[in-house]
Amino acid sequence: MLTVGGIEPRKGSIELLEAYASLGRPEVALVIAGGETLFDYRPYRALWEARAAELGVVPVVLGPVPDPDLPALVAGAEAFAFPSAKEGFGLAAMEALAAGVPTVVSDLPVLRQVFAGAAAFADGAAAFADALAAALDGPDPGRDAVGRALAARHTWAAAALHHLVLYQALT
Image (cartoon, rainbow, N blue to C red):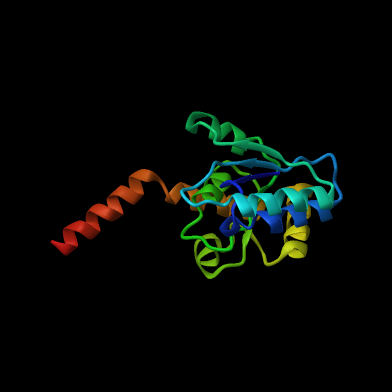
């Protein structure tokens, strides 16, 4: 099970620990990719480490992953967790959908707008655990097809074209 974004409050890192611990699947590793931001989250990281110890879980923390290595890491995941408390779009979740990885995202309005029909939504550690368990049990073919189609529409070329059209309309 993979998450990308590092360990910080807005990424729901403690909630993910709790969801992972309640899965009760020791054969499934929780892998966290991503580095530090500009903000000092050392106190949060200490709380996260203490909570992991309390729960008896040992996630695999990779830290920053080089861009060329990220697609293979994402594609190799059995499930992708995106428990963000605040998010603008969800690029990492979109990359998981492009790779055909069952994806569970926070039930936030922006994520509902972007990922409706393509990802499972969860609010809280218990709901995340349930949705992740379902994702780990096997992909939903209908949701997988919607996710791949959604990701195919959100290419860098399409984003550049939309920006160009907007900039031309504003001039």
